[in-house]
Figure 1 (spheres, one colour):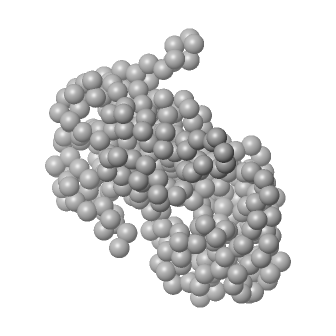
Figure 2 (cartoon, one colour):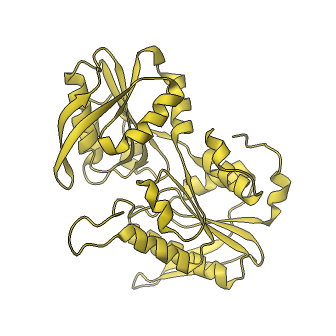
Length: 323
């Protein structure tokens, strides 16, 4: 991903519009592409109703709206929808919703009787609001791509993580660990990239937000373990997995997670856990607590997203980024 690559002169018809969810990331993407963020006013009326005004001409342009639907999820989602509606009415040629973090992704199936599939509902809303395509990172479940009736590129954070791991760890002693069976495919891909063995933590979730580690599949004794997952919210799963790995003989445990939701007392829980460090991507803007924490480190994703936008605008392959 070379920020000075060819084809930049052809981006003169590209516009970047940022919602309020993650201004630092949007600025980083603009810097990577050597573009400026399009002037856009997003404000609230006294009753918290959202108002949007695009303050530059976007008629006939290729517009990328950068907005994670992270907390406050509903506010950020409505900002995204209203921005896209404003762009559609301003005659933008194509609108791409760039969702570094796609909220509601954990509601990707019916969890019981009379429950919604909220991820599909949100996908429908984004499409109806005017998106022509979607670009996101590490969807919680791959089938969510099929919830959209428009082209959807699901980028992978594995290249960003593997590069950081190779720079910081002795790979001769490393082992990649999936904190649950559902994340095995993601963990296996990272293990392939760094040529490390794979282990799995088998856990049973008794109730939402709580997890109980049951067994470890694989010999982690004497290994430096790297837990890999897409989302860390309460941190309970990671902390339990780290403790189980240490008890099984691992010499150290670190975690690489794409989306650092880290709600409630999660930061304090991470700091008091057996984890040597938690590394998260900046798909969700880190809070002051995360930035101040000595146990949490943030990886930038602006080059990855920026290169994907560049290739999309120039009608080049995006999947080749991950070969």
